[in-house]
Image (cartoon, rainbow, N blue to C red):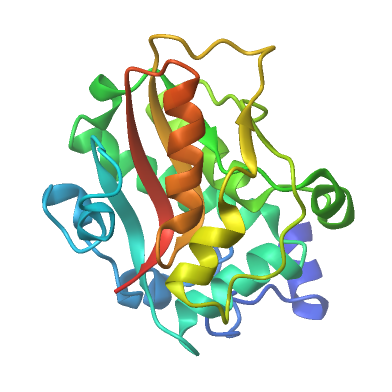
Length: 226
């Protein structure tokens, strides 16, 4: 009753379309939940995301919940997750996606979830790692532990948005290392990120994970460019 009264004066809005949320809806309205462009990549091993890594990295899986389109609702969601202090959005998306991955028995293939790290300066400024929030949701649904500090970003890099694939590869080369306080030897890792564009950042992380002795690596993201 109190929540209904408060919502009259401080209504909650869908983070994808800005419409008011109905009772029972959380962060996303049902219309957006069903209309956002899902990839179904977890149902097809040789999907468009996996093709980004052909000849570059050996992956167990390469999946993303949504297709990323510039100026679309998915881009708006990612912007709000990263820049509008909405970490709970990443956790919600991760938890829902984790349920889908469980149906495909992804949990049988992995021991631990590892998020792409932020540089400590950026983490301090933002207050949270958006990839780790997504990973937290996956962790809850899939009942797999998340090692948030397993990888370290040593170099503060500039934005990747307007860089070519070659520039991106140069920009992330050798910037990630394994945190030696956390053993990954012999573990099967699900590496998670917010968005996949060229895959250069993930490729660099995979190299660090392989050097740490992981048995296999798969990648999962909130969204991927087609």
